[in-house]
Image (cartoon, rainbow, N blue to C red):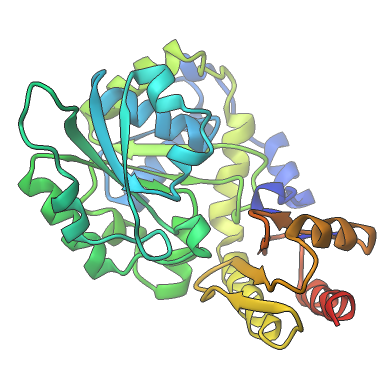
Length: 340
C-alpha cells in the first residue's frame, strides 16, 4: 500500500526508534529531562527565538499561542484555508473565546493590503483585532511557500496596528530546504512560531513552540492547564532530534517527488487543474466527466494507493517517508489507467 494521504502518516524509521532507547530521561515538568531540554534549545536557536517548549502536537502549539496572545473577544486575522480555522475543532472560540476573521488569499497567501483592510476600527461594538497568523507552507494552497518579501510586508503592516504575529510552521522546514532561506529568517518578525516533527520530519508525534522567554513561560502554564506535561518526554524528543540530524535531506526528496508527480498529472485524462507544486503537497481537480474525488479515492485504495478527497472534485497527494519514486510512478500509472 502506497500511502499518499498525508505526511502525518509518515512512520518512524528503525534508526529513529533506536534513538529512543539511548535517550537520557527525566521529569519534563521539573525541567529535568535533558533530551527535551536539548530539543527545545536547538529549536529556539533554529528559529531565532529566546526559548521554546515541547508540545504533543502542532494543534496544541496553535491553540496555546492563541490563548497566550489573545483575550476573549479578540480577533485573529488569517487565510480562509488556515489549519487553525478548519481543522482544530473550533478551538480558538471554544478554548479562548477568540473570533477568526478570514482573508481570501491566493493559495493561502495574503498581502499586507489584506491585513490593513481586515483590521477593525477601535470601537466598543467590534471585536478587537489582536493577532495575524501566517501558515508556512500553506497546506491547501498546495504546500505553497510564502515569499519572504510578502511575509515581511505582512509583518510590517501588522506591527503598524500593534498586532501580534504568529507563524504556523507545520511545514516550515519544507520551505527551508526548497528555498535555502533559513527558518530563523522566515520567523524573524514573528512573536511566536512552531515547527512540527510528525510530518515530513517523520517523528511519531511532537512539535516545538518558540518565542520570547516571557511568552514561553506563559505557554508552559497553558500547557500545564491543557494537561500537556509529559514527564519523561525525552522518549519523544529523541525522535525529533534524530529527525533534525537525519531527515532534512528526506524533505528535499519529498519536494522533488511531489514536483515530478505534479508534472505527470498534467498529462492524465480528466484532470483539469493541478495547483503549482512548491513543496511536498500535490492538489489536483477532476473535470465534470470524471468520477468524483471520493470515487477516485475509493478506487485507488483498491489498487493499493491512498489519497485524500478534499472536496467534490479535489484530490490531495502528499509525499513523505512513506513513498518513493517507484510509488510516484505507480500512482501516475494507476490514475492514468482509471481515468482514461
